[in-house]
Length: 284
Image (cartoon, rainbow, N blue to C red; front, side):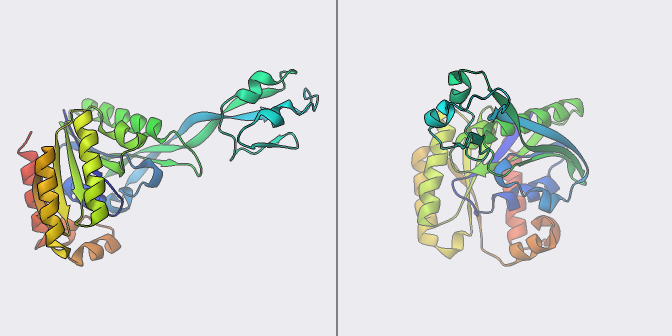
């Protein structure tokens, strides 16, 4: 079974647009949205019959007023200012457990957090595993690992040979959780200075985890000089540029209609994405 993860050094490069089009073009696959902090692949794939599951992660301190002697020690040692007037602010609490260990009356317990939900949904393109992290919740890398594992189970059960992953932007923990063990990484970038800089960092992360990486330059024609610079950077880092996709307002039109680009239009940019998919799939 192969896993293609689509990444970007920064947000807004067109990563989800590419993944949604791949979902419409590929056969026998399961899709997974690893961008759990701001999941949006479901907006284009229009899932139905979603099965929701709770995601528990981290912990928050809770003070038992019946046991508390009001010594104030927990409030004094809390480095995050989460305890005021012997009450815990769950948004400020980092779950470190220091107050739990120093409380002389054993009046503090650490309770697990309901940090979000993850879903297994049906789409007309195949099963989709996605998630929604709660407001101000952390441990998104753990949630990314969870949705990837569930997608793998579905692929094995239904004998699919491909997993399409819409990865998060950047190079942080969720990106590492999305990337490790993948068969191929497609990095979608744009010809801006920040796009070049952030693409370099993602390529370096792929190289560190020994995941083969290829590059797609989206909206290459808005600055062809920078597009040439991206190609040079990619060659130096051993990542081949496999596609140059032009800027076209039809992409925005497809997004506003909530459908993958290759289904909304069959010309121009849509054909370039189809060619990109042929190039990617030939590497299996």
